[in-house]
Image (cartoon, rainbow, N blue to C red; front, side):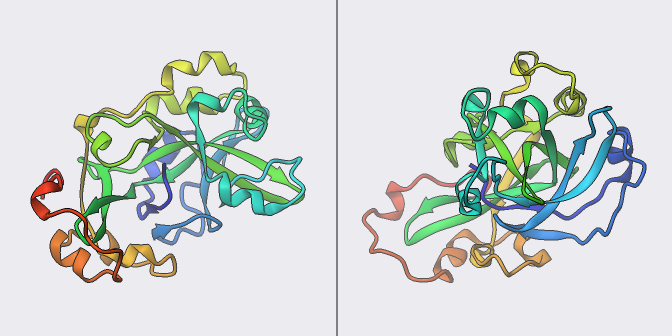
Length: 244
């Protein structure tokens, strides 16, 4: 699953390689992008020309009767995007990539849940594979998820589909048939990724500042979070977080 992510850099060379001429359009760094918020995606016209667009997170299928469905479609499991009614048309005709440079997950620890920030070791920007659709005049998107790699299997049962530069062109190509894309529906290499604990302030969507992606002491971080249900395990019974 991917429920929060960051888009704090705008690598012009990376975007130019994707075929964009205007690599920076009204760019404001985002440190805590949450569902229903507007974010940057890249999608292609029918002639194959890529375009940098603003779209709302939480896909609303064109046939939906109510926009509330978008809150339950922020992610699209790769295993079902070719057949599920909410995603199959977008998978065939409306694929996009979502600009990002990291994302958040939560690990169960004594006293609550510890947020962690997941990123590339290189610190570079990357993209998620996404699907978009148009509901009336509102454009929305969903982030595709896959099984986690070796690193993130200790964090969550899913991870967003992160595309290599080589895979981006194939994913965006409007002429590419869905069955030709199956080989890229796989987790990003674990050895290129890392994560560390961050402040529980990320739990609040309206907090959007650089401090959210700074390393925090995991013990102090959890203690500063709101009180949660009574502990049922001792610290020794909980697994340590990698890299702490």
